[in-house]
Amino acid sequence: MTETETLPAPLHEPHKTWWRAPFVASVFGLPVLAMEYTLVRHHHGMGQYGGMIYTAMALYALAWVLPHRLTFRMPRILAAGAALLITLFPVGLLVLLAAMASA
Image (cartoon, rainbow, N blue to C red):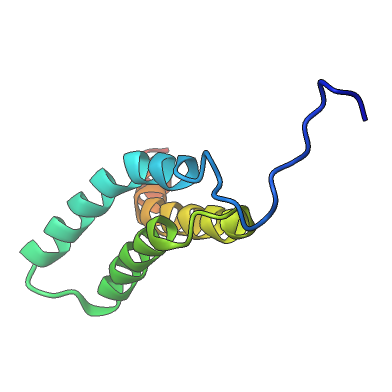
């Protein structure tokens, strides 16, 4: 190993860019999730759709709360990605149904 090469950070050290995955998921997903929540609450009932909303909220919170270590990088990415997927699934389904109905 030469003098200019650096060793990777140990797994117990804080990860410098831990915030990227939760931030990207939150920027794109939280406005949509807030819109879905207000629309569902406006129609006087959460039903089974409320479970999806609350699960997405819990996954966003988990992505932000996990320890800021390199060992928790993949669980943080998975939690943020799952929250974004759960949030955008109903909107994507509505767009698909609208495209099918217009054809």
